Length: 149
Image (cartoon, rainbow, N blue to C red; front, side, top):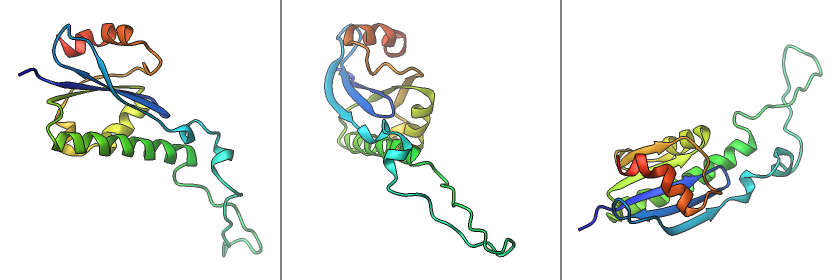
């Protein structure tokens, strides 16, 4: 029985999931996602200005309330959560034995934050690059060292 490795190639707004069943067997596309809200400008993600807060130390002053997390970052977190949920469910069904994550450093951090511990334990390699626009052959070349050391 072949060892199945899943490769998730993602950026903040799109992702592709590939399946590999061993060295020199190539990558086969399983799923792709798009999350266009992650590409939007912050002004397009909010409907009006931020709220105001009354402060006791400045009579009449009502400064704007700043977000703890920007709307754009919130959308990226939603997308990372969607991907992590999918991978977690697939892990529970034993769909893969190894997982390789390919994403920019920031998106890779968001994915790691959202993945559950058992799924993180299946991560056999990472590549800190955005290869979402790379072709399958080019991607396979970049992943050769990670998947078949």
